[in-house]
Image (tube, rainbow, N blue to C red; front, side, top):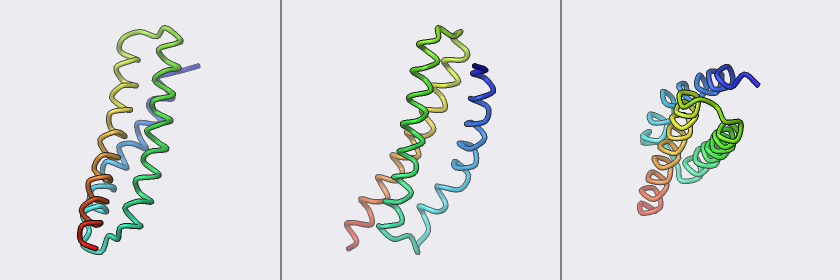
Amino acid sequence: MDWMKELDERGRIAKQLVTDVPPALNSPAMTHDQAVAIYQGLEKHAQAADALLQDIEDDDQPDEVIAAAEALADIYSDLAAAAVERMAELRRKR
């Protein structure tokens, strides 16, 4: 498998989400249910990124490939954490 190609493709998606998710989460019109839906989508991406990282490590890839996979996993983890924070904030406002 061409791990760098796979990471590049997934990285493009992550880059778009980094651009789109924070403004959506910070929207005054955001509802708790919408924040939950965003979190659920991000969590699926995070799990897929973690699985990809594990596959890359299992394939004994060079450190730079592993580092790229770790960075991808970190992006999704950070976005999911932001969604959890927003969910908690919206729950308190109920």
